[in-house]
Length: 102
Image (cartoon, rainbow, N blue to C red):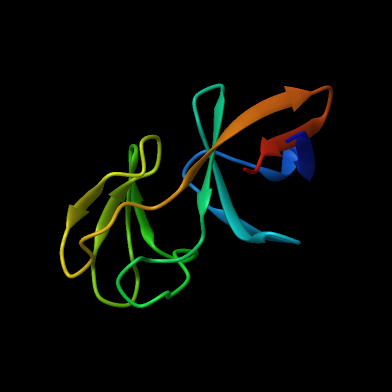
């Protein structure tokens, strides 16, 4: 599978999460230092968007019921969710953020 352009680098900032629609579903993007992270924008507990959730380093808390996930690895860290979220490989191509969706 090839990489899909999902945003401009300037649109993704540290400490903030943006959500973009793709033909594969909604993808959340954030920046930690020089690295852009991409993961599914849906809590595995009830499919609520993670956009708007509290960020703490690599951790995001679902704004609906408080489930927590590692944005880098996708690991579920706190209930009520019990399943990990999908994470995606990211590459920067000039000013574009591209995500590999399997």
